[in-house]
Length: 407
Image (cartoon, rainbow, N blue to C red; front, side, top):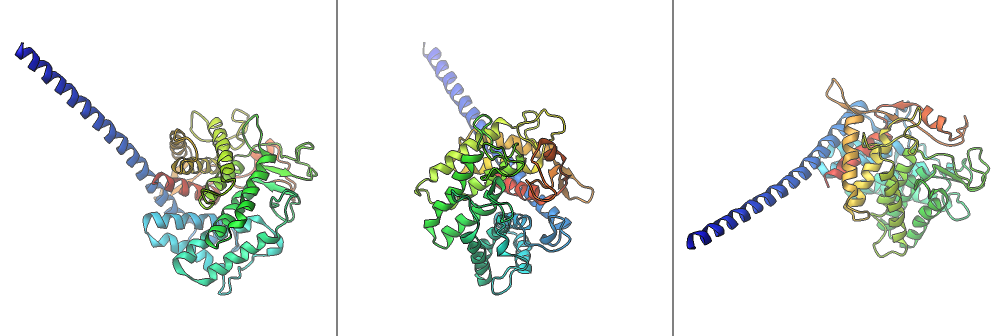
């Protein structure tokens, strides 16, 4: 009896040890997987940034400009480079971005080529990385330039509900793109320079555009909205453009997670932003291509002839989901969806070049509404715009998404 009892005890101990070993191994594997994806993110962020600096030694020309220009695209790359510098502690990325600011901003804070009277919301975006430059250097010219851009928003034309027009020449129109161009800068200004009363104005930008562009059937947001309903592209009843453009939704999604960095946790209606973000995240999930893990140029028309998987929107969605999960704004299950999307980007869009650089491919070069020549916002229009490699509107979000994997 004694021997049988001892045998049973040894068996129980052995089983317990085996279970403990299995649990430890499983935990170690999960940790290793987490470490691996973080390492991949850092490696790809550095490699893409180094490649970008090889292709464009001066950040001014990242959008294939022939002349230096103060615009949102060099600002986007500069912002991504500053973020990468903070992660890697490598000053070359910071200096690359700083070179762009120093080329355009004089000691009085004036910005070369910037015209306030254009009331172009795109011009505000480049101001975002100036907060980091000012914090790091304490050079007053950066602060002065920040105030120059903030001043534009005081008189920027608005819809009757207070939403910023996309540009002065685009009368009565809000585009999803514009939320990214203006709102994160505006919110950071409110926090850094103590203007808390304007957070309500920031939140109202999202409330207004979401109210008018959100489609309850698809869960997506239309690219643009014309309050006057006078544009040829505008639905005569709703004022909305006719399609769901991937990058427009991507800009909007990134704007939401970035603005939430600055709006205080206890601020009234902050929850409105989180509610909208959850609706956007649900639509991102709904329209992810299951085979590739990435997203289409026209989001809800995946099987339609001519549509294609597009890199900038895909990078923006991955960035948004990773950051939203990290900050607890959306359910943690979205993390797996985001990782699948990132892996899809690497497989579908990243190309190794013979010189050791990498390229991000299949990026829509540009898309808009109205203007001259007139853009009708049709399906044929969106799929007919040029597609190119290494466009900053894809490269910047890809670097930011890669950085998010390290966090």
